[in-house]
Length: 279
Ligand code: SAH
Image 1: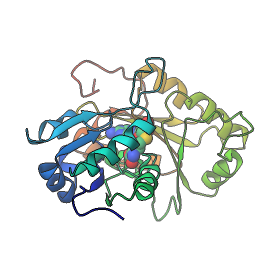
Image 2: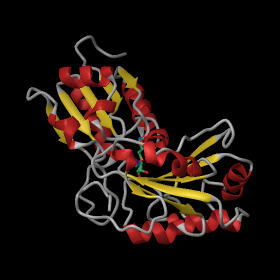
Image 3: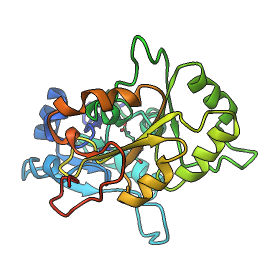
């Protein structure tokens, strides 16, 4: 049982980056929060708008050797400690808190500790990144299913939680595959899809920094996307999209406005330093 004097933890989605894509509820909770614990994916524009009265803490976890980052156990403990001290905590995550965001793990931990919490959905990059680049995740004539996976796992490992044969089969049957956290392993993942029978000319795209100033999109096919992404220097955060819906971008790009309009259809242009990725 939570105590009346305890605070509440709000597991809040910050959306893909553009502050205008915060939900109204997220903005209201941020304005009233005592403490904001955020991931590194949350954009500065959103954090800068937090009131001075809130303690804003970066608990981002970065993979790699720097190792000095807050561990998940520390974050779990911090959430409980702050709430028990009577503070209302916004746990702010990029996109939606429950899509590859550990919102599930944190809610289980909070429940086990007897802390009240609420989940505030956010606009997930899994849908928003393709969409703003003119690639509709589903389409009446082109895609009747949408599969979202992590690209972080080694597809050649037997213990991979992903069944690449099924994923390839879904695309072959006319579905869309969206891969998050898939920049580093793009070559492996493309090889896995090809190895399970997807055609070399299956359309593919990478959308980097969706809804942010530096948004950039590159399109191609399973045959060309690895080289094109490398050539234009696609870096995280980016989503990969595989399926016929990618071709829609080519037909709508001329009229697509906003940051989503930038990027190379053929991937041959190089990016420039005007921060929009346009030549
Ligand atoms: N909870 C988040 C996903 C966290 S995993 C969500 O719902 O969006 C982190 C991955 O999300 C990144 O590796 C990238 O694949 C994707 N991502 C997050 N923000 C993005 C953005 N603005 N543009 C492109 N991809 C993004």
